[in-house]
Length: 89
Image 1: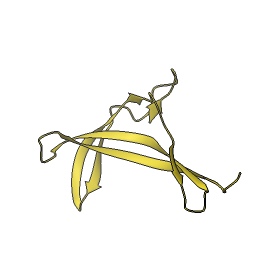
Image 2: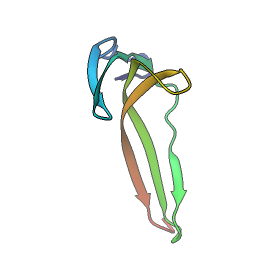
Image 3: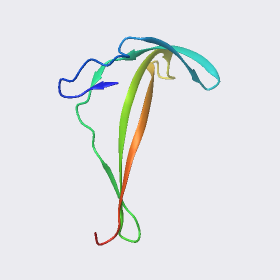
């Protein structure tokens, strides 16, 4: 979980966990983080209405696995907030 504007330390920070990834169990460590910016993505549909989407990161897990380029494999647990504004609103 994230810290925002000096809030409490997340309870999961530094905790070792095991997650399933592509049918394989992968060990990782939940990282503590602070939210620097959470922007909205805004999409205008053909009828003129707007759909706004914001991703909310819940956990960032650093694993010992590597991507093809050698960088660490990072797992992000997230949710989304979606709003809808009809055309002309």
